[in-house]
Length: 207
Image (cartoon, rainbow, N blue to C red; front, side, top):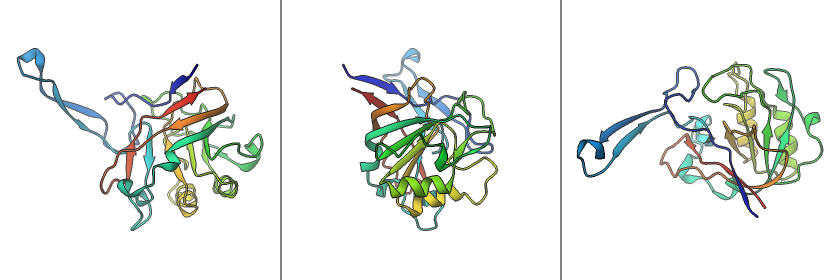
């Protein structure tokens, strides 16, 4: 039997966003309850709210934006890896249990347990880990925190390492109920012209 694991954060006004970024809000413009012919509302939010993909243009001048990205990295065989690290630590190559087993690797750190409460001491990726994963043919890396770089990073080394290697990333995943192992990932971003990022509805399929 096929089992679906929804690993997406719920978009709501309660969702925590990066300090200073635009929070999620929904403006209701028409209501069936008010006698209108339909419910109609407008969404306002940062493109990096909750579970989302970054485009290379997010940090690279002239880098491709969301509408230009190949969708292949966002769907296919995936491995979930669980790590237990001190708050704020980067994931290093030695934290891997072994060579990657799929072209998409998601890290469960449990260091950002509540999407509605922002915490700065989350785990992040290391450039060394990204180099190793790229050498093994990994095309996408994701994790259950707001960023692949630590909160206080201004150089964004891991973002740069990912995009230099031609890899893609997912941030803000919800993996607390997902066991380590092999799955099929489907996490397609929106086709946003000029988009530096995009919310995704990320799902793991367990056969």
